[in-house]
Image (cartoon, rainbow over all chains, first blue to last red; front, side):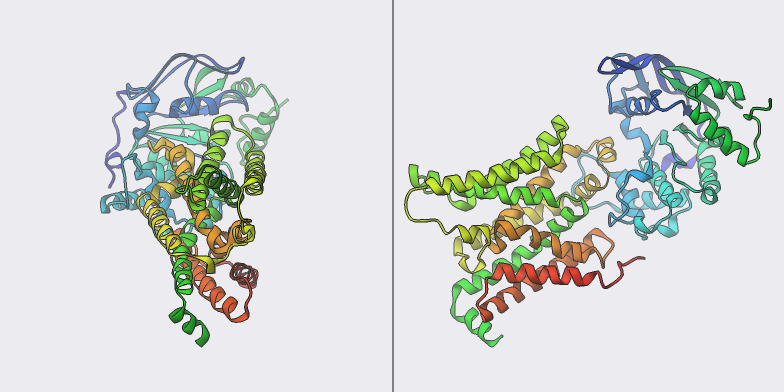
Length: 264
Length: 278
């Protein structure tokens, strides 16, 4: 079993330390004086309106963008140096569904490194298979990625991130494009992982936030931290744009959760 | 068929053509699979057309300045690598629209080649053999060059197979693992460039893209792993090359045309069968 998956982590150290971080595209500030920290073992959900800076924050955490001001440390190092300890799960929808590759081949990408020449070692394959087993996808190792359902593809992506033996798992909208029948099973997988490692998850899905989050980071150029559960007013405040909240409220209403509904 | 075996026994150019055809098939099958799955057929087409620029320049400078070491093959390799480098660099660095750069490289390369050949002194250049290819003109030096280039291409793919696959599937994640996706994207384009040079001898500048894309595209309908597509594409390429050589010899038609038409018909017929699924 990969070392990172063996034991539940004690929540004591700080995994992410961000202070007075600012970032801009051209003249437009996307993030301004953002400060937060993520202790080890926490499951933090990042929500906010479209264009609020969630994706930019994710890119900064991955070291794909550089901040204009402030500091960002992951495990005490710069994001670029800490990359090997970050497991990243992008949205599965952006991949070519016809690419001829198996689930195991994709998970093995988590074992890539700069100096590797030739094939993967037996140890790498064992770690990849363990990661697939962790997300209950061991039986699909030899199946083509194209033949998997949306939920299965997303779990393969999580297995790839786990194969990196990460200390921080970053997920970008993990339930996007997954239908409701599969979502429940997928959430169970994430709940299991939540007990074992630090998770940061960008999402629009407020059900997912209530099921998986320890706390919520609301990003809209600046950052506000909220404890759970979120009240209807807080949600309204976060999504000041209006359309998103209507959509989420409708989704929650359809699931029988009326806490965010207008009752007047 | 007996005539083909007789010809192989009696004529060295036939043996060279057969050897180059079979050896090149390994390169075409492997690299073609990357081209089809990464969806960069149009880049390969632009590189193949720009090769005429290198061939024309080498002929011109060879004749005008007496640079005898500057062979058309060397000019073609230089043009292919420069085109691959420019397409990759401009796309990554300036976020320029890839299709615009490809169109520019495609047309400018080919036009420059035609201009150089037009102004080159001495006897007229057999332009048709470069544009449509003629494997029967393969010389001993072409055989040596093909062996070197094929070993180079297959060696690079063998060494960096997993990184090339990762770059083709997910550039961003590859970078996050500390592997330079830009470097391996350039390597892939460079490999495609060298492969297109090999193709010019077999099928010419215009037909080369069909010979590299069609076997892999056909194979991808019946295999669902990258390496299995490569093996099937190599087998198809070998069949097309040997078949093309035999029939063109028998029926006195240009080899390149016959190979490409056969590859096209087989690809079209492949749609009569269902794409393979697990």
